[in-house]
Image (cartoon, rainbow, N blue to C red; front, top):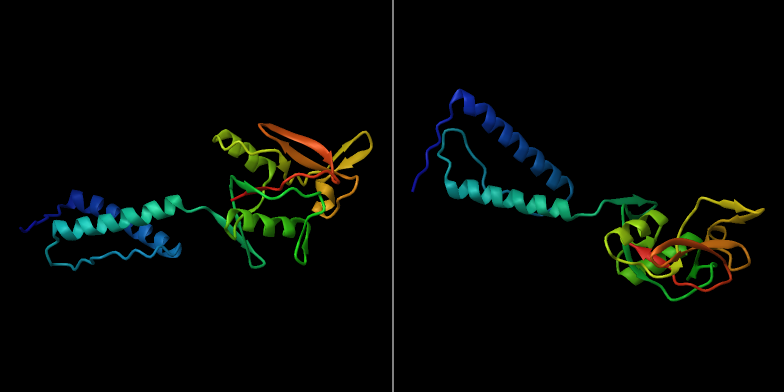
Length: 196
């Protein structure tokens, strides 16, 4: 079977737009390291077969699906961090003085969450991530989360257990199941809520 495509001046513009779109999708996919090659290239003057065109569209569809499924990730100081993450698990209970090997505070919380969720992009959840998790039905349990905006109430400062380095009588934020947060003393014991 042989398919011949006649390109009229009116359809040439549409064909150029489709070609440019495929090129942009191809460049975007390559820049995100999606390892699916476009199987066929086309040469001016040679016939284009339906099989060639279909196989190229199939490859573009695979690339597009991979891009749509990818999570945005930020990398700083050699560490990766999922942007717009949702709840993925909880650690064992700990006070607000978090440690993991030589690490303390937020870095230790990230290390524990990486182990809990099995990815290098997991981290201690923020309040917005827990709210989004609740909105999609994940229902995070009670546990510590990061709320780095300090709150002063009746002269006392409520602030992430001093960056999660203190298990004393300072305060930290605890997610209260389906409700936003509670403030608890940092010497209390709660799991870390992890997001990815």
